[in-house]
Length: 459
Ligand SMILES: NC(=O)c1ccc[n+]([C@@H]2O[C@H](COP(=O)([O-])OP(=O)(O)OC[C@H]3O[C@@H](n4cnc5c(N)ncnc54)[C@H](O)[C@@H]3O)[C@@H](O)[C@H]2O)c1
Ligand SMILES: O=P(O)(O)OC[C@H]1O[C@H](O[C@H]2[C@H](O)[C@@H](O)[C@@H](O)O[C@@H]2CO)[C@H](O)[C@@H](O)[C@@H]1O
Ligand SMILES: [Mn+2]
Image 1 (cartoon, rainbow, N blue to C red):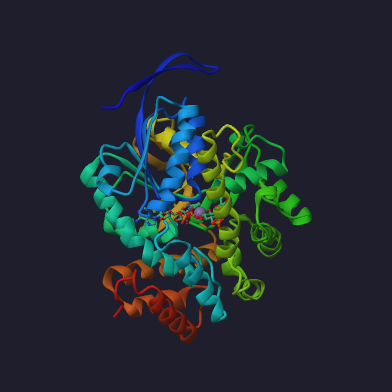
Image 2: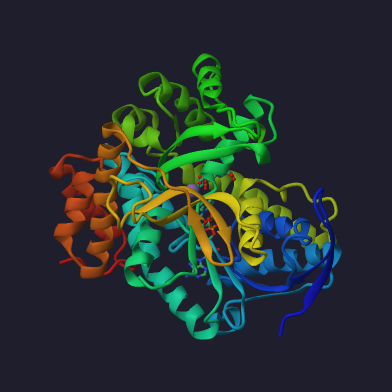
C-alpha cells in the first residue's frame, strides 16, 4: 500500500496543502547509462512526483549492481524515506508498481555496434534508430518490449508504462498493433525537448515559457511554431539565427564531436527547406550519401559512447560506491532526459495537463496522414493520458516524406509479426537511406545473420 505525501503547495494563484500519492516505480534497464541522471532527476522532483519505492531492474546483473549500489547511496543522502532496491527478477520488479520507466537495450552495445557498422560496410547509413540500423534494433526490441508489457499487466494491471526504449518509432507502432486496447503506454523521446532547450538558449528565453507546435514521426519531425508567453511565434527568429550563425546543443560542452556535427547539419537543412525547424535525425534521410561519406565504419557512435558516456558513468558510480557518498558526484547531472521522464510521470500522476511532445496514434491529429501511424505531436498529459493538439493538413513534401517513413515502420512491424522476409525487404527498400532493392537484400541478409539470436525467423 502506498503512502501519501502532504505537500505544502504554493503558486501565484493558490496556496494550500496538496495530498500527493507516493509512487512505486520500476526502472527497466536499471543498468543503463541514463539511469543515474534519471535517479538524480527523481530526487530533485520529489515535490512534484512523490516516491515510495524505486526498484531498478536489468537482465545484466553486473551492470545492475554498480548502478543499483550507486542508487542506494544517492537516495540515502537525498531522500532516505524512499525505499530503493535492485533486481534481475522480473517477478519482483513488476509487482505492485504505479509507473514503469522503460529504457532497455536488447543486445546491448555489442549489437548497437553491428547495427551501425554492417550497413556502413555496404555503403548505407548505419545509425542506432534510422535506416537499416533502426530496423535491426527494432526487430530486437519488439520481443522484449512485448514481454515486458505482458509481465507488467500480470503483476501491476493499472501501472503506467512510460517508454523511452529505441527505436521508439518502431516500438510505439509495434506495441500499438500488439496491444491496441492499451491506454496506459506512452512512448516518449527527449530529442524535441532537448532541441527546445537549445532554441531557448539562442533567444535567451525560459524554455518553460515556450509553447511548441510540432508534427511528424519519432526522429522524423519538424517544429512549425515556437510561441512565447506573449503569443509571439519565435520560429522565424530562430530560423534566422541558425541560418546565419549555425546551431549548437545547449549542453555543447558535454557533447561528443558527432553530436556537434549533427546539430550543425540543422543549418544545411534550413537552407534547403526553410519552412520549419527540423529534428536533427532528418539529416540521415535528407542527405544519406553525404552522411555515409562522413561516417567512419571503423569508429561509429557506439565506439564514442563506450569510450565516453559508458566509461564515465560506470567509473563514477563505482567511485561513489567506494567513497560511500554521492555528494561530490560529477557525471550525474540533470539533463533533458531525466527531467522530462520525471516531469511526464508527474503530469500524469497529478493530472497537471502540462504540454509535452509525445507519440500517439494519429487518428486524425494530422488530417492527411494514415490514422494508424504513431505520430509525434504536442499533447497535454493528465490522468487520462495524452490529449493531443490537432495539427490539421500538412504540405505535400512533408506528407510524402512521412508517408514513406510510416510505410517503412509499418512493414518492419509486420515483418516481425508475420515472420515475413518479403515485408522486411520491402521495408528496407522503401527507406530513404537505402532505396536500392539489391542493396536492401544484401544488408538484410547480413543483419539476419548478425541477429540470429534475437530476431524471429524471416521466411
Ligand atoms: N527515446 C529517447 O529519446 C531515448 C533517449 C536516450 C536513450 N534512449 C534509449 O534508452 C535505452 C538505454 O540506452 P543506453 O544507451 O543507456 O543503453 P545501455 O545499454 O547502457 O542500457 C540499457 C540496459 O538495458 C538492459 N536490458 C537489455 N535488455 C533488457 C530487458 N529485456 N529487460 C531489462 N533490461 C534490459 C541492458 O542490460 C542495459 O543495462 C536504449 O533503448 C536507448 O536507445 C532513448
Ligand atoms: O548516441 P547516444 O547514445 O549518445 O544518444 C542517442 C540518443 O540521442 C537522443 O537523445 C539525446 C537527448 O535528446 C539529449 O537530451 C541528451 O541527453 O543527449 C542525448 C544524446 O546523447 C535521442 O533522442 C535518443 O532517442 C537516442 O537514444
Ligand atoms: Mn529519441
